Length: 257
Ligand SMILES: NC(=O)c1ccc[n+]([C@@H]2O[C@H](COP(=O)([O-])OP(=O)(O)OC[C@H]3O[C@@H](n4cnc5c(N)ncnc54)[C@H](OP(=O)(O)O)[C@@H]3O)[C@@H](O)[C@H]2O)c1
Image (cartoon, rainbow, N blue to C red):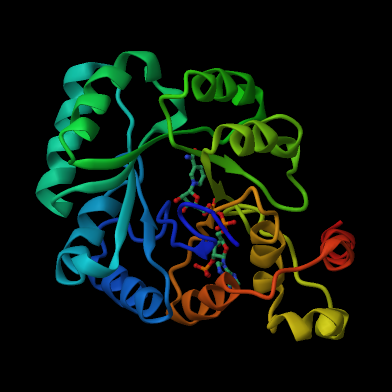
């Protein structure tokens, strides 16, 4: 049985996606939710993304889990970010400390909010493998239930320490940059190369990359970002079985090399 806490599913990232464009956010999020996605990832660091998402989240609150972040160099600023999030979203399903900024200091008040039932899960994130040691240190406290990290066939450092640690501790893994990352997306091979993957429900290269990550049982959720509703719909289709086996994963790795 699959026991992953947040998934395995495809969510939606929002870095550099919407800025203050609430109309675009509504269109992309509505398509994403209609296609079966349930988790939206955001942050105070992503310009106006949280505000842009808030309208459509309120309209479809029962269908969506908000995973957002605290990115603050003081407790006061962290609490102010959280109060804005509560005004926009009502509650926060996954509250993550962005880039580990002041994570030890923020933990106490975040745990109080979780105990009060206003946050479901606490997490930590970092984009750089240079900070994976500190991410591991944070997880070892056993006070975080999720970790967000980069993972794709060209960026696999997390497989060394963090994925085994997360599995051991029962921490849910959220994958950022599943397509290679904004500005460095992994280019698609000729489409006939995807033929062996078609029995796995894969029609596009992006679905192959998303399914490559989700087929690792230690991964719960991938959060590709897109401004394009058709991309959102196609990406969502990668969130269900059948999962890839070792041979198919190795093929995706070769095609991505
Ligand atoms: N915590 C952190 O430090 C951190 C850092 C980076 C990212 N993140 C989170 O992770 C999310 C994803 O990371 P990311 O945006 O860097 O990388 P990504 O999701 O790997 O790549 C995003 C790029 O892929 C393109 N794309 C998406 N679906 C596509 C499809 N079906 N076909 C073709 N192109 C497609 C998008 O362009 P289109 O708009 O044209 O589809 C966009 O340029 C972010 O939005 C954010 O929520 C967190």
